[in-house]
View 1 (cartoon, each protein chain N blue to C red):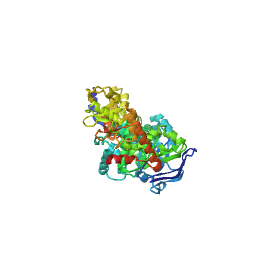
View 2: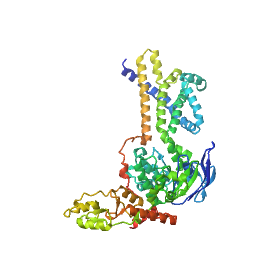
View 3: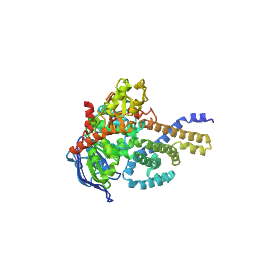
View 4: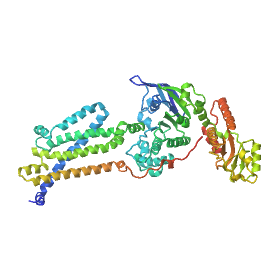
Length: 229
Length: 393
């Protein structure tokens, strides 16, 4: 059977599983983002809390995903939630350090100037610090999204459907084409999501687009030669 | 008016940053806090807008204790400029400048038009409005910092080493511009620097701090250069304070000589007569418009044959000139020192010669200025007045 014939006969199923895989990948990344921003802010605000939090995130990241599925099954059954919860935890492990790094990348002079101009703590966070942390946070979000999309296929082992179905099916039926196509689909899905995130970053950070746009106006041309004795 | 009333700042580890500071900053004046690093000058500045709170004592802003004010509201009424500019990298130049107006709910259109006004005021091209801070040079960024601090028209401006990070040429320009701006705006400015030259250049009043956060002397720059309170202040303000102090005396008081000046179409014989009559070893030749051409020595005139024209003589360069109307005695002295003839050429606004001066004449003018200054205990023709005289003449 040629690749094209297989693709066309299974088109509906491919579409369905790609969609499910996308959801299983994106939901953990987005929920992870929603949780990691406040957690990261607290870790920066109360800096004593950051070393233990970092240790915990590293430890959690080391747990095999399958182990967490098994632990969760008695509580959440064979639902999407059983896959989404561990993938969210993994996203947090990537995102929280990035939120912390992003917030810490704001120069002290900028924070101080904001305070001195009359920004309160909350307003300074939302209008000055978070916008500048966006590039680093989105860098983390890209890693979290791509790895969630890829890890989601493991959920097939407990029957939560994703493109992982084709891996297991291809193996059982000794039909490698199915496996190769699914690998390409997972990669394509991850690439598309990554490109969307790059676009979002581009839209949100106009100041980063113009690293070298336009010549600097020569300082001396502007200088009015005021001479005093 | 800002008043420090016996203000101290001690940190929990026992470090004393500021020790019993009492100081008045008169409204509309520029007060420069100067001293070596760790002398408490920046801490003192930061206590005014409550970035640091004092351990004891009070700071009054127009009679009101700043500790009674809500910090954010207090800070919106006080401009703040720092060495590293602290510009928001994610906002355009105009939005950076409009920061405080936007915090004060002016509305975007009004805030931006205010930002454009300020860009013009601080000498930034309108074309830079939509740029981001990293696209500007260091000097331009510092101008944006000043514009941002002035945006909501606060009566008080705090500046913490505002010009330390730019190169000397740009720094001198920015200092001149601050001086010009202050002449228009009359803000109450407190500026921190470690650079004595800067303090003397931009300050109406200079407060010298000692290590340990104590005040050594507060005075006008001219008074401080003339009468440092003690050896510490004298050592801190530097060895050439005598010459620097001449910056505060207008060259208008100089007695100029016009006898040793001759147009270049004069005959050699006449020129020699003029120089002899003036008792001067050098004669300044001028062109048809009265602008300086160069010096001829009396020896040259004597050895020249009667047929030679004055214009054909090899002349000694007149060096750089000074304007009695707007320059100081320091500029006149500098022009004299640099001149090969030991004489400096005074010119008017159009560059026409109004006379020449020599060491002897300068010495007399300096002495007279010193005496007037001693008698009045006041600034003789102080800085503002030098400019006023220039405008009047």
